[in-house]
Length: 149
Ligand code: ADP
Ligand code: MG
Image 1 (cartoon, rainbow, N blue to C red):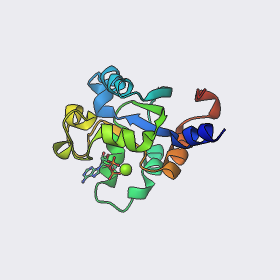
Image 2: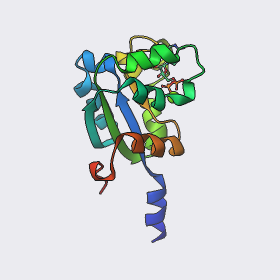
Image 3: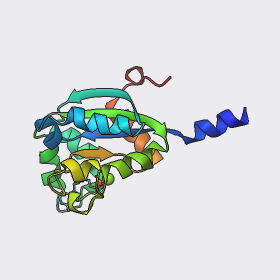
């Protein structure tokens, strides 16, 4: 009983986005392959195109930043793939796999180092905390779309 509880503590969900620059360059499969090779499970996935209002709401925390308008315009510049990822400590694990925001500063073998084009067009998003993961998953997915066994 106790062991089960401990295991459950580590099992997390996080929200991932394959951003327009990566979808445009046909990199969905390559990025999913990196996710799966790292023993992270994709438990929900769909391709959508954001409205400008969606992008502004999603990135609301950055609304005072100089790059906010550019960021929102970029996020609506083409379809994106939104995903729910599952794994032990997957929030931090996926942030590590993504690499630094600026691909130039990202570690080797991270998604952003391998595929990112610039600090803005950096190919992927991942939630940065448990609270944000829940808010961001709920932003894109209904419960019936997430297959957590
Ligand atoms: P992360 O995606 O690594 O959590 P942030 O939350 O700081 O990074 O920023 C959100 C997104 O805004 C980044 O992924 C990137 O697309 C864009 N961005 C961040 N910093 C800049 C910047 N200095 N110039 C342009 N775009 C930026
Ligand atoms: Mg962030």
